Length: 166
Image (tube, rainbow, N blue to C red; front, side, top):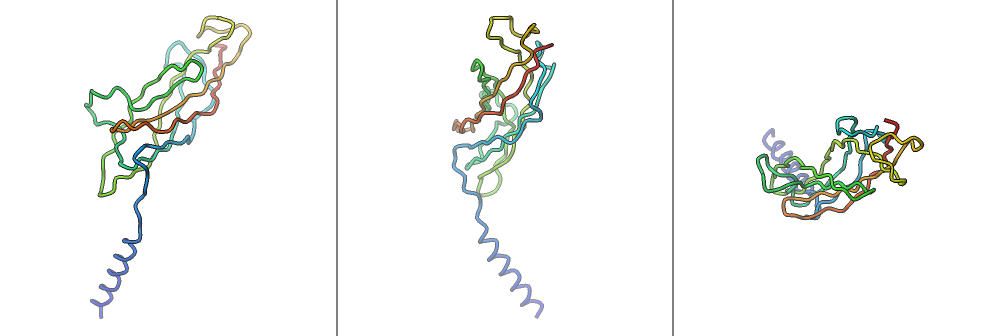
C-alpha cells in the first residue's frame, strides 16, 4: 500500500510539474522603470559629491545579459543618456549565467548614478552656483544590450532635481 501511495504522489508531481510553463520572453531584452532611491541631488564638480540608485526591471528570452569578468571586447551594455544634452553614461551589466534548459530570465538591475552639473540657459558656467537659479531638472533615458547585440526598449526616468546652490 505504501508503494502505491508513493507511485500516486510521484505521478501527481510529474503531472503538475509538466503543467508549469517556463516564461516565454522575446529574445530582445525588455526593460521597465522600477525606482529611484531619491529624486534630488546636489550638483557637483566631482562625481562623488552626491549619487542616487536607479533600479530597472528586465526580461530576456535567451538569457544573455551581461558580460563575463575579463571580457575586454565589450565597452558597455547599459546605455544611459542625460536628456538635457544627450551625453552618454556607459555602464556594464553584471554577468547573468545561463541556467537550465530554458534560459528566459527576468530580474532587476541597480545602477549607481553620480551627480552632474546644473545647466543654465543664460550661458552661466555649469557646475557653479547660480545667483538666481536654485535648481535644474533632468531625466535619463536608459537601454540595455544583450550579448547578441539586441537593444532593449528605451525608458525614461522621472524628473530628478539638481540643487544648484552648491
